[in-house]
Image (cartoon, rainbow, N blue to C red; front, side):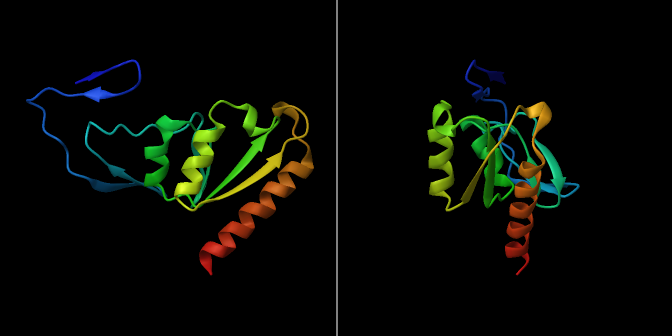
Amino acid sequence: MEMDANGNISKSKDEEVDEEEEVEYGYLQVAQVSHSRLLIPPLNFSLVNKGVYRSGYPNKRNFAFLETIGIRTFICLATEAPAHLSIANDNLEFIKKRNMKRIEIPVEGIYTCIHIRTYVTVSKNVHQELSYAVS
């Protein structure tokens, strides 16, 4: 098995494709897929609580992974407008195709000193989304 510069994996004729099966890691349930479909989480991806995750801004390589965990809402914290990020259009297209919700919360200051209003806004949005999931 080899990986090219784009992260694509090729396998020899002797290698068999694994069948999909689900494995539970704590609260995170992820499908184990064939070697030809590598699942790559976004930078700094982490489980916060059941159904709540955090990460850096995802890109195309992360979409297959994100699909396996059933995300319904993205909360984007950004110091600049996401339109200025080269990957913003890919993310918006991914979200739109899957009928997901996107919430943008501007961040005041730098990441080492985020204003308390940002934390309050994020907490309210996460609580609201979790309430919808339960009802």
